[in-house]
Image (cartoon, rainbow, N blue to C red; front, side, top):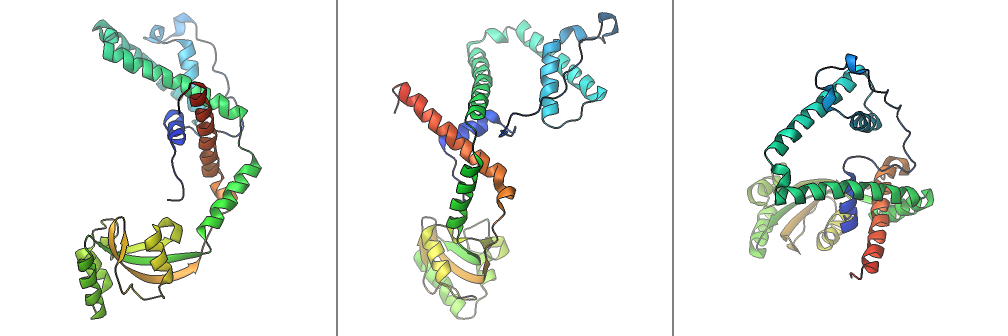
Length: 274
């Protein structure tokens, strides 16, 4: 993996959810019209707060859903159903349960945290220069070559040595991988790991792979934290690095996670927490 999730980045993703964090404030969707006269309301409309309807409509429009009478009717119906469930739950006294109160508090705090982080990021936006610098840093770490390799992973060194002997005697790498490899993600493909840069792999694996000539396999087992590998290099090509514009959203999210992480460190220090 190229990216690493830190505590703050994980918190950011968990709280923000699937909503993208904009570099600039999002355009405001058209305001919902005022509530219809009471006589024109459909059954159950008295269960729905206009402010609730306006809020959920604003969220859906911000997510890209087109405004329409059908959407508004569906949202109103959804809110009616929610209110009916809430009233039924309260009638059973579920809102007074101590465990339920804690869950409701956590949900309420998540909304507050989401709003706080959103406001903080709007006030501490990631600059284009920072995005470019991060892009160049990652690009440099990838190297200029991609490798297509196969491997067979086993638990014991002697098992790896036995497989190497079979290969040296004319055994087919793909068949031996399917029969013996412990890597469930590649064994059915004959150990094929597809195209990747060396930094995608743990160092002992990457070093052994890069040292191989095309079409050759490692003459001795390669040990890693996962076990013992026999590696075969199928091909090498120039690395294809995506343009900055293609990965800008991911880079922005990565750097925003770092912004939140630094702020969280500040908050913990102020609270006397290491």
